[in-house]
Length: 108
Image 1 (spheres, one colour):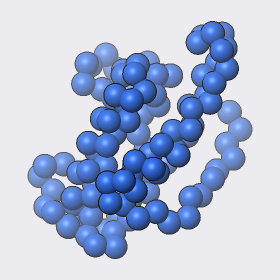
Image 2 (cartoon, helix red, strand yellow):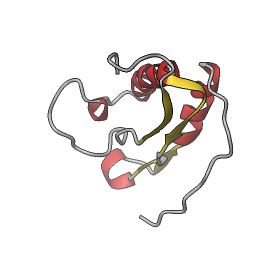
Image 3 (cartoon, rainbow, N blue to C red):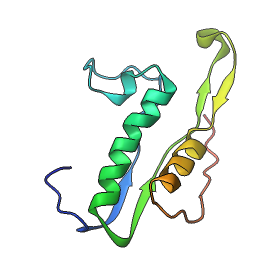
Image 4 (cartoon, helix red, strand yellow):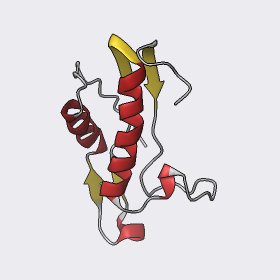
């Protein structure tokens, strides 16, 4: 995103990779290969900072993200990690203003 000028974008729609659930192409620099949740969030923050830089004042960042549901069979216990909430809190801390969250009840 370094090629995109500051404050030149009105809308960004994105969906980050799933944390620790999907096998992506084997490249070390892929976010989907991070197995430490805090490190994953830190790397997402780097992306969000670039988004904040390129958005015009009042521009919108729409993030399509699902919470992380870990299966007992694979991880030893059932766990739901509230990824959407963590992204929202961290985004507000870096200067984003939040609007209404839209919940999509996806049957998986």
